[in-house]
Length: 338
Image (cartoon, rainbow, N blue to C red; front, side, top):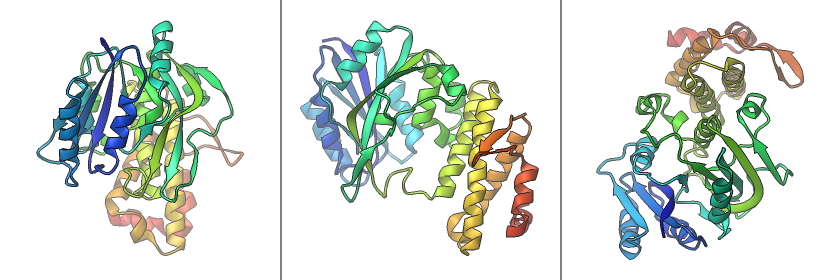
């Protein structure tokens, strides 16, 4: 069968899970060929040996890429992304797995019939370490269609990695320069995320959301997102929306800068809480504060419409944020980092 879909699996120290993830791919019922590219970032937990055994057993379906040193998730996944030559691709992390054996067939059938769509997405079930579960998307909508205007109007459902299939329209001519240049910088996390892939492809076509549970998304302490604290999550999100603003050549500040400033505000909420609880050193490093204030100054250059926070109309600016923080002694911290 001709390969229509490439699945990328960026691996790093996920040896205990990876066989289950691969099996969930091989168990998919499709009338088209699937290529799986597993790209390992110098794992030290035995993953390499497991991947080599899987590649040897399923050599016609699995290609494996290995690194001599750990270079980070973005570099790891991009070296696989450039090898995609199929019409469609998706990403399945090695600690997640499909539970709907017809998911990929349904996704490709829809995208084959709807050429103006670049995304097919479904829901996932989050699985916690204590065995509790809940849907990733809590919406009761059975299905929906979205376009780029829905993003700008904040009427959008972005699904988890395991639930999304993409038409190969962004990377088929190479990795965008802004993503290549992000490697090794504070922008690197912005371009390794679900949000980035979704937004970029939504700008090239419409997205269909089918609210079915098709995969398991594991939540565990060693996850890239879960192992960091809330301050850092907010900072990554703030930087991410600024970087998406740059990706779109500084268009749509009313959405991207507003979102970035919203997460900056949440960063300061976490800082105030840390100061009140005398946990500032456990919450943030000086480099993080430099990053935060640099980002604030970048955002301040662009006009942002009023936004609503806690049902009150506010305009978030550097001056207002700083004024609100004066009682918490953050002026001393600012002086420290200058």
